[in-house]
Length: 234
Image 1: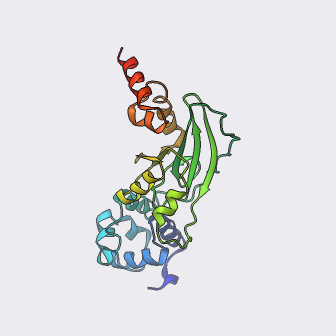
Image 2: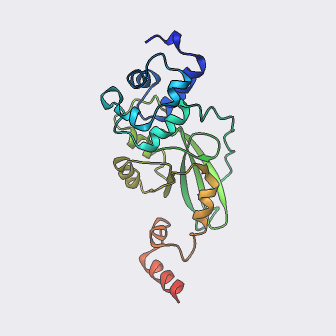
Image 3: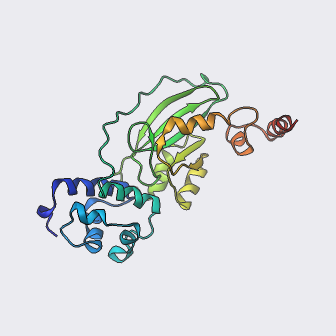
């Protein structure tokens, strides 16, 4: 395998794709690609890759990864996605108590203010304070991909330990269990889109007629939830 035979464009695609795959660097992805396609890799050869060919390559080195995670990496390999120039959104001032009846929502993101991240590979968590009629971005928490920790899922969960809800493109069972233990309720949003679209949908459910799971997340007592439910049915 000779890196000199790989064009700059293809090398960039491979580097970006590797960032989408948990615990996978560019060298590891190259080993998988060496088994999936004839080397050197070219744009044409990369365009023929499939989820199955990635999962089957290198004795199934990436076989256990979530399909949506591999699809995201394939978009980079095929040149369907690239470096985004979208700037990060500005953090808005917030002090505890500013927004009565609000909850904290974390969103897995890779670029701009998009909900486009998978729990195990997203670059950052955008953290919002959300009430029925207001949304404020209160923090941006970058994931240290180079951090040497024994449990990467637990590390990522610790970044959102003050949140009640996590919006994420995809998350596996063991990782979801760790998120739940921090007190957050993970919600999968597999379709990439603006964060605030997802939050707008959530806002429609916030209030006295919130569904039981959301009422619980918001800290309403069982008595309150029963009363709200009876009032909604009346």
